[in-house]
Image (tube, rainbow, N blue to C red; front, side):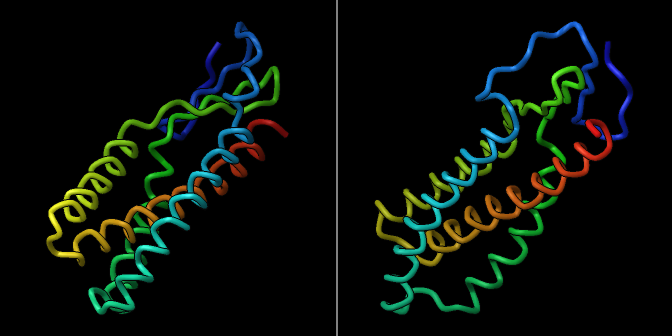
Length: 154
């Protein structure tokens, strides 16, 4: 039985479902998202550092791309489909297609710029936006999960 909820992308499941697997639960998925964020950030930061040293990009451009992308990432948390399993006190995630397509397109843009050796600044800005979106989304999901836990699982 499903209960109504204010959030468009949140389903409340009271009963009639089996317990979700460990990898589908919010804690496991959040750890995966954090590890992916750390990997992308370390790889991209190294590349950005090299481009900063060569003068292809400066800190002002990075901040102008980074700050808005964090805000957009915080907003994107609302589009992540969540299911609240009240019977088992778990929250599960579904695959977020919109976020995946955005990150994929930005990464392809970065790679094309790198392969064609054109406009380093476009590739660098793509990297900064990816990091900002990922960071904003992870922070936003923590906030959203905390709110949902308090509202439905306590």
